Image (cartoon, one colour):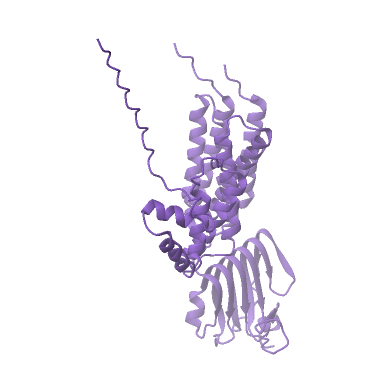
Length: 367
Length: 64
């Protein structure tokens, strides 16, 4: 009887791993990126290299793309250490992302956006490290606490500024509603273990709203630097209003009638200069939330300052201009000596000055 | 039986203070009340002081 030799079973072929993009170690000029992409796409790596060179002339996009591949695509060398996201790699990726943004968005704001972005990136990195690092080294924990502190501080400052801006722009009712909502949350939370943390956002909203309410600040309206030169009494009596900025009202071109003419003026935040004729009696009634007034008797002001110049002493029949000014936060100056400077030798060619003060003699009328 | 959640009197007092302050500011913003600045700023300061005092007197929260 012959024994038949058992047939050796064929060894099972190992399952082919999914073909993934790797950098080539055999076909490499710089980092093996083009070689790896060529192999992955089954095209000549030379074509990939040419594409990178062409893209480099498109605002440097080729270089950025190559560096990003170098950073993110692993090598095909099995002995190479696995990719690890250390600080250097994160920083490099962040800088490359900023560079790519700058190339792709030509109107990229290079001003405050870059440091802000870098700051936000650093905070996000620290937070990710905190979440991923379960064991948490001492340095990591301190870094995470700093990051959380920065995030909370930024949120607090942002909330405060947003509440102030929202209130000054006429959204005070909404901000007050949010304060009440925080209060309701606190009361409700008191029976569910406490929600003391809600007191902080409530106060961050209430403090700027209180300040805006106290100063009657309202910056709705025109913003910027404006000069008004009325030419008729009707224009004058309609008054002028600005939200935020610098307002100059030059009344010298108006032929004022005998008797009192009112000029209403309103500025939310900023400075208001009124240039009046030197032969006209001027009285001022100003309501200033926070700031100062100078009508020639020196600077006076403070919080919720009112100036009421008595116009009963004005002789009847004289040309009398009565200013009714409302300044939220800022400065009011009234004067009849205006020096316009348009000569060379100054660092600014529009440096004008107004000397405070108006004619008191004009109020007495003709003797 | 599930244990009753902790009651925190500091949160209750703070909430009532915040509601009172918010209502005051809401009425001012809605032009129902014309609050003088002399009263608004002390009211805000009193609210901050009241909340701090409530939290300080009650002490830190302890969970059973």
